[in-house]
Length: 117
Image (cartoon, rainbow, N blue to C red):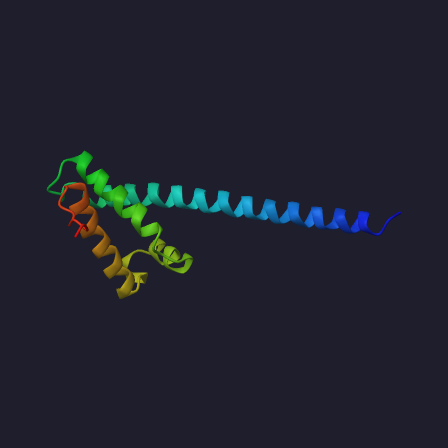
């Protein structure tokens, strides 16, 4: 048996397992993102219920925007702190979420600042 054959098989197996790891990580990340946005949107809509000056469709769009933009800007540790509610969040995270909320409200209402010069 040629020594290259087992070496090639080993390298092929390693490549496959690395590919499988990457695929799992990608699927997990996408699943986490989807679930985070769904849960954040539901919680936001529930919290805004009866308090929002906007109709329910507009409120849901704003909430979805907040969830989508927030999930892309937080670390896993920050995501965990969100589960504990506002008492467990850092002031910096609260500020980022507030800034995101303002930006999303402007975006959904068509008031976002133009970035063209």
